[in-house]
Structure formats: structure tokens, C-alpha cells
Length: 115
Length: 114
Image (cartoon, rainbow over all chains, first blue to last red; front, top):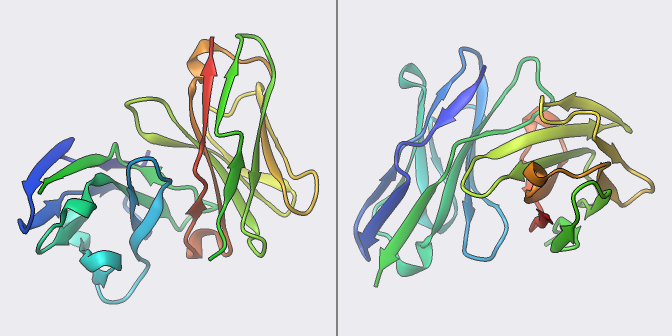
């Protein structure tokens, strides 16, 4: 069965620090990859996605993620975080074969940015 | 920008009661989904719906659950006889293109079963 692992449960950073959140998935076939963000009191919003092409994808608010197929990873990065990045971040995948697009989510990583 | 909306935002019910959670997907979307998140756990897929029928469902989506698109705008999730373990946040999502497209999520309905 497909699964998604996010290694960090809670990350605490100071403003201007660099961020990298890990995401690994288990599925041998072709996948689409997503990072969603949930700000406090708000709903899940798409941060960025990878379908095909350049494995380095750029999203909103200065976030980027790199798909490394050999490592089954899709880590999220931001060179300099802001207090407003405080949120929970979810990695998700969907399989292109045998699926109607349902997303498999990781457990989420809570990011707290200290001003 | 169009959004997925859900009502109610919070539903409290007694065990054994039926609940209906409502969603209005983005108007030109064709694929509809329900997910749930039990407190402290992962967001889990429940069911996907396309062309007026269920296209995929998870093990969680047993006979107590049903979905319906009663008109051109609403998409509902019914839990026939709620259990304590159904307490969770329920998210509706919609997308235009199935596996090839992004899913847009609603704000969720927090269901509390007492």
C-alpha cells in the first residue's frame, strides 16, 4: 500500500532561518506529489505540486520542493522563513495508475517560527 | 477566486444519530472527494465521486457512509448511525481533472459524536 512519511513532527525555527521538511513516499509507479499548507484556523491550501518535468518546483510564498525519484523523496525548502510561515505542512501523493486521484497524506509537520 | 465551501463548520451529535455534511464544490469541477482527519492523525481519503457515481473508496468508507450529489451544486456525505470514532474533521475537495489536477479543499466540518 502507498504511504507517505514526514519525518519531523514539529519544527521550531527563528525568522530568517532556512527550512527543509522531509517527505518520503512508498510507491513504485508514477506519482503526482503535493505540498499543502494549513495556516491556523484555515483550510488546506496548495503550496506546490509536481506532475512531471523539472524536478525542482517552485510554489507560492518562496517555497520550493525537489523531487528525487531515486530516493522517493519530495522535500520542501525555503531559504528564509518568516513568522507568517507558522502553519502545518502536509506532503501528499497520488498514484497515476489504478487511482481516481485520491491523495495519500503524510502526518504533517507543524512549523513554528519565532519572531 | 472560487472556493470550496462546507456547512456546518461544527456539528455535534449523539451516537447513533444520522448526520449529513454538506459541501459546495467549485462550480466547473467534475471530481469530488471526502477526506477526514481524526485529531492528531493523518488526513485520510474516504471516497471519490465522478460522473454521479463513486469511483473509489477506502476501507473506512463502509456501509454507514454514503455520498450524494443531489443537485448541480451540492455534494453531501451522510453517516447513517454515528459512532464515537467518527469524531473527526471532514474535508471536502474538488478538482477539474482527476489524477491530472489539483484538489481544492474546503474549510472542513468538525464532527463531534457524544
